[in-house]
Image (cartoon, rainbow, N blue to C red; front, side, top):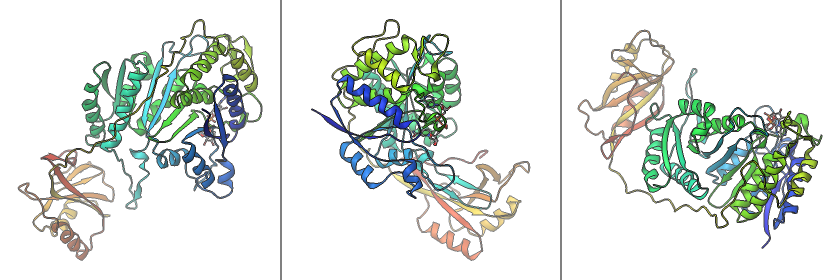
Length: 477
Ligand code: NAD
């Protein structure tokens, strides 16, 4: 049955690499029909700040599968990242990026690298919730959710099982962000035992990234929250020697988007020199996903043989190459190898029945949530925390001032005069004896603050969940 997909040729080198890929797809016998949409620079220039219009959204939402060439985001303010918008609007929660080296045919320091990065794609600091709160302080909210963690971590293990991978590694910074990254690590530890056939380990992101860039052969599948995943997926693509050759999949429950990792490379656009491999490999991820793994296998093996024979575009041309070709000649070479397999590099075999489905998320039973107090954030231009504490103690109404921190560090009581302070103060109110607070105590406290002329910029309620503290202590508390 013919499958209709949406395509966008994008900007810069986009149209020429997309034409090369479509030529290969046609020659491979892929039963695809294309609906082309306009996105990117042309729309941005027409004043559409999101770079995509209703017709394109309708097509993508109808066809559910989108093969996208890179677009150019104009410099300057006001333009939204189209990729971030698409990922979040379509619920594309998993970003999958295989990073493989093709030693000795493509130069790399890591001949045995074969890592898949699975990045959470919707949450974390990319929620885009930022506020300026005082003259000196701005804030970005890091949101990590249990459903988000469960979906991406399960996806990573299911992916590992389907593609016969041995190990899933979790990259987090839970030694510092004990609640947010702590939740990601905790869910990883809960889910890993459900996959006894797959090894698992957890790395702190800094040393994990150092090891990944030094000894990538230690890793197989890596799963990570959004920001770290963004960084390590570029590191991994780069050290595999082939950032221009990596493709990625953005997978959601109903839609999926496939694209090259690289951008629109305006300086080389229209010259027939760009490497179409990144978009072609993204197209192969797409074919696997939409139930055409045999075509994905055929194209991947023909492409690998082309690379192995040294038929290279300018970006990867070296003394190991035999022939320097342009974009369309490279596509012709891949087409001439369809049906053949590489002699030295690994031959791929995709499971014909491959299908990755996740169980629906099940909410856990409610916990017992107990209000313990409130953190009141104050904009105050003074420098002596004792002076601020004296003002704040006037607001005590059952719950009383327990601690003041500045940028997370305790400055009252018994702060250090060496600690640098900004105009942004977190002031914690709790009962002396640790007993629960009443909900009314918080608005009463805020009313008093108003009467005393204190500039409250926000509050955060402090809760225990089933007796477990749901907020961080002050550093030094
Ligand atoms: P880029 O990836 O376009 O280019 C970086 C370097 O890699 C350049 O030297 C370029 O010539 C080279 N290169 C990239 N792809 C290549 C290919 N297929 N073949 C040969 N050489 C290739 O990154 P950039 O210069 O930072 O960004 C250019 C534009 O692309 C910007 O407007 C940026 O916003 C956009 N961009 C889009 C996407 C996307 O649509 N997914 C991703 C990244 C950047």
